[in-house]
Image (cartoon, rainbow, N blue to C red):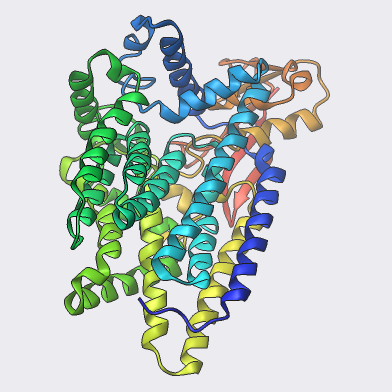
Length: 505
């Protein structure tokens, strides 16, 4: 691939400044995010698998069942988080969840760093590599969830690790890189089984090479199987049975979760085929999607000219398109936006940056080059402004394709993270020793756990509106809201109120 005609020294130094600022920013704000409805469940998965590893008793693990806190929910990263909790001897819930948020962000930071190296390897340009990393960070929903989503964001990161080590393995064809690549592929599969696509992608690139070494290839295949078992304790009991059962569950997950989609309440198993494409379309910066289309165009065009020159881009397209098609064809149950396939997003961005570099190379006019570059930078800055002005609710980003009256058409704070801010408002303005809290979402009470203990003691959960002092709602499945009591606190993104505190007694 051609390199961009840019000052590489400038962009290399810019990358250093970017990563320093990014790391400092994460360290300063990781305490700002509330608890999602999934976090307690995810922690339980880590705890049960940790106990099985320590004791060897599989009763508790097998008793988890198939759904919810199920034994087939990939536990690899959760085991790491729970082990860190035990190692640090954390007891208070606030300390535990803040630690989890901090480590989740640290993993994402490392993921972005490796993504930069991946971009550098593909595009041979510090400018293009920096653009790749910046676009990944300046993606509002991804950025927010990097702090509290301990399943989909670790999956995204390990897909980056696996992709980078795949290219090194294919290039060097050594036993060492075969083992390293296999480890990342195995770990990713033990977060979400859909990562099964990764080793097949690696095999494709390897077999497309002119010269191939057989021993590293066999080592990669065997080690991938071993590492998949190593990081997924339930497979220690009966590898073949439980792996097939986990795959069947992924293909036909029957948990029925109602969700608001295009103005209608629909259950997860009955969502239309276009659910994922529409959510991606409505929640991804438009400029990124334009560059994706440009990248796909040049990938097709260049494949006809020199097929092998586009092999890495073919891998990215495969990893972007296949999971989405699999969900549509298998009619797999998804809900709460497109978070189940967040791991395709790095490949989305790599294709987009490929489109940007190819477009710059194809345009001969210097003024046109500057216009394209300037437009891209400005579009990223506008997204950054949204992220700063709506902190810590970047996860509620919608673009103009979502239209108006978003709350009436799509789920907003479906994970209930904003209850933290609602509770903090109450505690700051109500000095009562005991405050009774009611809510339409159970996650509101989970957010008690991230409130400092001296204030947490003042909060009491109640299901009785007559005895409640405040009612909190994030409008999940109730887009029209409630009319009892008096609204004393609201949180908005744009013109949309997505969280409300209503004073009752």
